[in-house]
Amino acid sequence: MDDYRAPTPETVAGAAVLDTGAAHKLWHIGEAVWIDVLPAPHRPANLPPSALWMPLPRHNIPGTLWLPDIGRGLLSSELEGYFRRHLEAATKGSRDIPVVFYCLADCWMSWNAAKRAASWGYKQIYWYPDGIDGWNAAKLPTANAEPAP
Amino acid sequence: MGMMPGMRGRALLCLLFAGWMLPGSAQAERTEELRMARWADLRHAIFGDRTVEDAGDLVAIDAPARAEDAAIVPVAIRVAETLAPEIRGLYLVIDDNPSPLAAHFVLGPVADSREIATRVRIDDYTYVHAVAETADGRLYATARFIKAAGGCSAPAGKDQALALERLGKMKLTIAERSRPDDPAKVKLLISHPNNSGLQIDQVTRNYIPADFMQTLDVIYNGQAVFRLESDIAISEDPSFEFSLRPSDPATAGVIKAEVFDSNQRHFSQSWPVPAAAQL
Image (cartoon, rainbow over all chains, first blue to last red; front, side):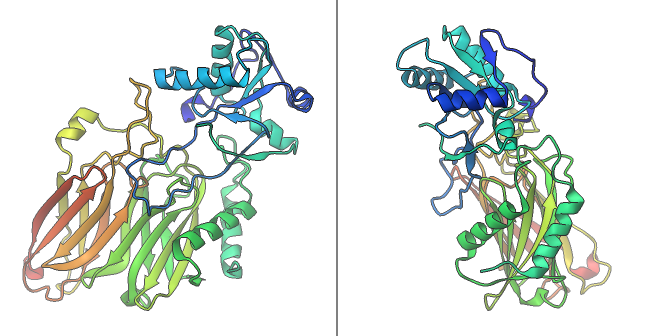
């Protein structure tokens, strides 16, 4: 994750950039698909059932689809399939529904994900670079999140 | 169970010193309140309804306030002379790690419970708690705040092919005792990737499957020194420093280390322990 934490460019090709005010307005309108790309720890398959597995809870923007790890620079075919499948379902097969990508401030992952979705022909991509950090700083409501299966 | 006033005071002191509102941590929003609530949850998950007292000066954690390498953070648990003879167990908890119970040592009759050290992975800035347990079930806890991030997902430091070749090999050294009845200080190093399952393979871009030591038994002349139960929070190439108090230091002995890991592998190795007079 540390690899991805650095100041990001101001824009991303094929997407419009949102500041927190604009993100909040868009969220209120309620038509966009919101996607959080923050990585999530997976319970190791061979951890004994009795072992304590308690990743810290993730609170993100209410109504968000959490697709962990899809913002990595290179995606495994499995992860790319996961991303495409969920994006397709969330937009009901339309390339015109607005989609917003975010994670943390100064993090390349949401930039990568937005760029990737734009390259797949989605026409209304938004990138919210300040992400949950900007949202929290503005004291906007958050909700407990679980990664999409 | 409510928070002990002494613990809160010490915790607040750690917080002020740590200056935790620094950039670079995903946990900038972890307030002291949230951290205390997390510890309460962990206490409940590990100890149920048992009373966990503030250890005060009886238990201490030795660790850097800011780790150089979050995947290899040296941590020592120290127990005061007055309490040490009663201690049968030591728990190391890394509060904000996804697998927070990093290590549980069950101490045997030959262990010197005053100090035990290892190296751990720390995922993000966090409190680390050490809890000492007496034979009659009393629990004493102490905390320390450590600034480290990314330890669970850091790539393996060593060449993986070479690591596989020496998997399970162990090295053990015993320091010279200045006096025959001094405890013998032991260093044990085990070759094992101890993969957390949260590291990405730089080539395939997939997560490297978890592959970790689950139990370590150290035995001296057939008597337990300790059994360790641990998982992904122990660093690559698990390393331990501990002391043993043989009941008869004047005679020579054999120390044995036995490891079981998450892939059903089993490693066992023994070393001679010279009699005290010969060291």
